[in-house]
Image (cartoon, rainbow, N blue to C red; front, side):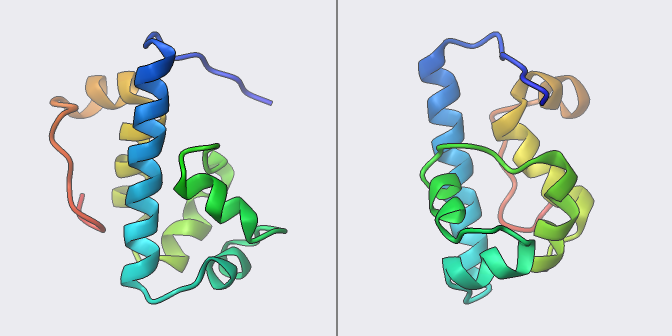
Length: 108
């Protein structure tokens, strides 16, 4: 499994993950999905995985990004760009510039 340590202190990483979790929760709620329903749509074995992500404990595996984008009815490129801000902020900054500018749910 790929493990990548950001060059951010652990508190920064934790806060980014929490922000990412809030973003995912906003998207799920905007679609009117329960955690259980989203888990079924993205192929997660346990709905508690959705809860963990929404509280910032964990991250979506990159090979599941497309399934998540489809389940949340978001263009995959926009979805990946947004989650990259929370999961890999250094790469996001290099590719897209200002890391403090957040796009809204579903925007790219």
